[in-house]
Length: 170
Image 1 (cartoon, rainbow, N blue to C red):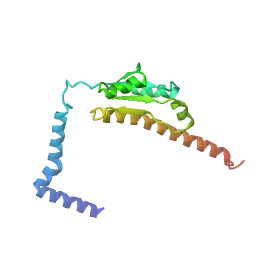
Image 2 (cartoon, rainbow, N blue to C red):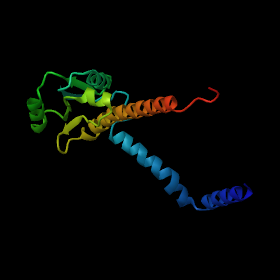
Image 3 (cartoon, helix red, strand yellow):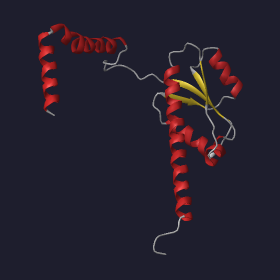
Image 4 (cartoon, rainbow, N blue to C red):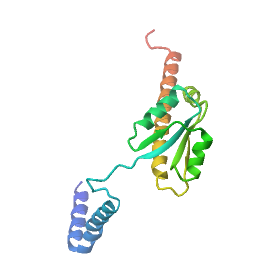
């Protein structure tokens, strides 16, 4: 423990002696953060939340698809549009009228319920600024499902294991 304190004190003394090190380690990163914040409008009290119109095509109609739709609808930066078929939704993205489209494939709910792999399809406009945001949102939804599925699988395997093992004292 004493060695750690000596090393820490030595580094602090070196830092105090080298003023440029302080600039490079503390002041410069803080300055860059403030500049980036102003550039992207993060500090403005009047900044509006960007809302992305997102067509969603639901080929499944099952219970898990409804959960996905509910999660996406609770995202404040998304306005879901359900009135499109897949072809017209894809065309909106191709024409640059929408940033992306989410397609829930048929059999999505049954695949989730049975533990089979499945995925939502996200089509984004090439070079669109909203693409990373949409990808992050869809990944968040799907990672939640995979986490739930892993938890369910572990719980089922533990219950099955408990019923196979003899109980002590019986």
